[in-house]
Length: 632
Ligand SMILES: CC(C)C[C@H](NC(=O)CN)C(=O)O
Image (cartoon, rainbow, N blue to C red; front, side, top):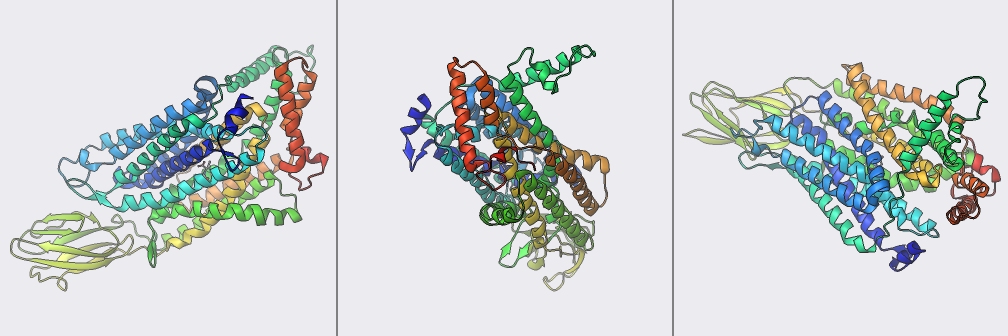
């Protein structure tokens, strides 16, 4: 009653005003998260100077951590602080983490000799690791709380509005992600610094940090309008205790003299409520089905690591548009924003006309799509390998001074250095496009211009009698990248189509198959599959140590196909349930005088009624009573 009256006061078009703040908060937070993530692997490689394997490993450890911490966030919110305070406190931790990352990327802090490279790399590595740890704690911790807090703002009879809210919420995630993956690579490509100009990772991390502060402020501004549910007690702890008791009770009663029970969880009946046991059985059934799922995320999350590194060896010139390697990741949110409505309104209804396209079938097809994406990535890699030498590092050039006097060489933003007579400069990183070098000594100065292709590397020979442009000869150490970045589009298309079928459906499936009080538990379980998927990348990359990148892509595709077959068999034996109906049956058997139970029963029956009008129908037939027990 309190909840309804609180909510009904502040409505616009039937929606509580408070959700506006939550949706804007999510947009800014996802901007912050994906913006930072977009440039992370390049920061590892070019700023911290890690090799591809280390950069990929740390990237996936970080992503895994981001999806492990939701369990922590759910426990803190449910059993201690409540969702509102948890979001505030962990957002502060998150913002501090983002600021730490931005500071860690300022090369001037330790660049004592002012040559553009940090002199104390340990400082930058340590700061980055602290920053990433705080971000993982913050982003993961608030993840299960924000969406659930949004859902809490609606009263029982606002089911339709709540569904619209979740769609808008998902679009905001991808809107924030889209904008940030366009913007932060542009910021990263700028040059900044006090003593020497270098690629501006500090700005690329600083803007996401600012957006996280905005997210926090927006969330706090809405404070007076939220419905704030009190912490309900730690359901996760109850579940663990109940499972623990069932196992220990079973072990204690091993002998033949003890009659068998239908399900091993029934051994908890001696101490625990039958309803709780039934709810745990439902959750375990779904969790069992989750076992093969991490393999999908193993492939999916390599967009940000291996695929971005792959793009650095490609040509990003799209005519009027020049795309940075890390900007290729924007293809994912762009496709999400277009594919979700197309799938929902066109593709699914069409397929449904031919076959019963149940959630688990969609997820299976989604896995196959991801495998196809990796076959595409492998083919693209073979194409790249045909063109790619390995020495020296791509995009770097050097000068050899053949004159009898020292010369200075520079280009706007890059000081190549003072080159002694008959000596050579270090390799310097030069942008692509037309670059004008200024070469000067005490007595003369001249300009020399040259077109630099993506990833090309040159050595320039300055003769003894320098006049300029026509005197300097160049040898091409590395040809410009010729494999075009557009070749990555098919792999992005398949992985995103896979994501829509797998991830969006999986989220909805996890919600619909979970008992009412354990929806958060299953959401945390779902996010855990993402974490495990990222750990698998580390294990496979470390154990397999495949020298050829294309072969690693094909290995991942093959692994996913094997897992997909296993999943489809498991899914075939899964029977869809209606948790509310099952819960209601247990309630009926319970104590009718208990007011709380009565309310729960009424709520359960309401849900059964609502579901029977088709909101969770998987067989396309709204009036079919067998719906609630549909097989895959
Ligand atoms: C796939 C994530 C687990 C969910 C979602 N990401 C996207 O939608 C990316 N396209 C997110 O919450 O970040």
